[in-house]
Length: 328
Image (cartoon, rainbow, N blue to C red):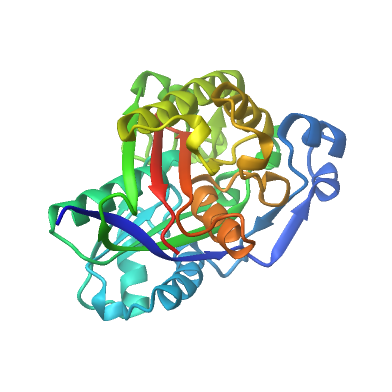
């Protein structure tokens, strides 16, 4: 029997501290009106001083595993999509594996920026389709406030969070139907953390030049995101033999309300069939889609059998999409 990967458990975790637009008015030269009209954001969650990415990932994983009814010893692999891992190494997936007690699992981190979770889903699906693995835990987690320059107006864009899904084999047609991945490395200079890697290792100079923060060219990212997210969504729909009219819920990366609206309109998907929570959570990078899955399922926006389309765009430039039947 041909099989694919189906999502059988979802979980999410958002840090307790909340920073709203009025708080940001006291930090940087901005206003609530400016932020709302240009980004659609009102508040964002900020990680506690004693937390890191693996802590958020752990708190998101527990309810996902519980919903799936899966023991951690049954996990074959853990894939963590993140660009803000606890350390350059070891991988956050390794830290999470140890904390969960998933003694039989392999694991690794995947770096594709805001397109990380959609990319990770495609990897998990390939493992399950091939028969190499049975049970996988896939997460999107980012703590962008740790690499945000709080003197830059772009600081209003980012928040912290984690989302997790558990995937197991299901008959073909009931889980992930198609995925699409693409990159354009020429766009990398427009969304980059210049310092801290082997190109510009940490030094007094890199710190003084604020190279360890996110550097972004907003207009270039905006244009690339709209174009890439539309391309990715249409590609997965075509692969699986569907059209945007068939989609029950579009779950796009929550980058900016203007990007989301531009993508939605180009796909001709009505507002009631597009998931948006950016007002309350801002851009949590790889976490936005799995956090959206959890909220949409919990609130009844997603029901078993629904056709769901994800689409995302991030650093790289990288863009990705998935089309799936909701299994829970």
